[in-house]
Image (tube, rainbow, N blue to C red):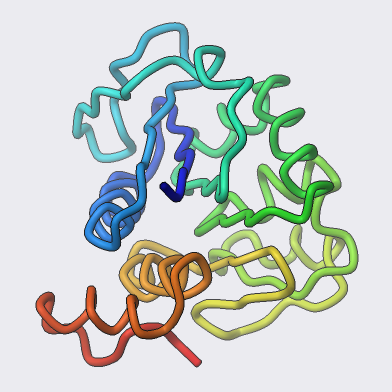
Length: 190
C-alpha cells in the first residue's frame, strides 16, 4: 500500500488539503491526515473544521512514500514551527522519497527548513520573492516536478497538483484513470 502523510494545522488551506486527500484516495493511496496542533480537530483558513486521523507524533515512526503539505496561512507557519515535522521532512528528502508542497508551503515550510536548495520549484505568487532565496529556480509553471519534489501554486492548481502526485506515485495511466470520472481535462501536467 502506498502511504501518504498530509500534515495539517489551524489555518491550513482546506481546498488544497481536501483535494489532495480525495484524489490520492481515489488512486488507492492510504492517506493519513495528521494534526501538528495539540488537538486533532483543526479550523482551516476559511473556517472549515477538519478532523485529522491522528496527531503528528502518533505517526512519526512510519515510513511514508510521500509527505505532502497544504498551504494556507497561518497553517503553513504552524507546519513550519513543528520541530517534529521539520525532522520528518528532512529524513524524507534525505531518503529520496517524495515531498510535495503547495501554495505558501514550498517557501514557508520547505524553504525555511533549508530543504529545497538546488531545486526548481513554484509556490503562491505572494511567496515567490522568499522562494527565490531558497531554490535554484523559481518557475511560473502551475505544477513543478524536480527529482523527488512536487510543488504547486495555490488553491486553483490543487486538482492538477493532486493528479501530478498520483502520476508520480502510481504512473500516468492511474492518474488518467482517476481524472476521467472527475471530468478533468487531462490527468497531470506534462
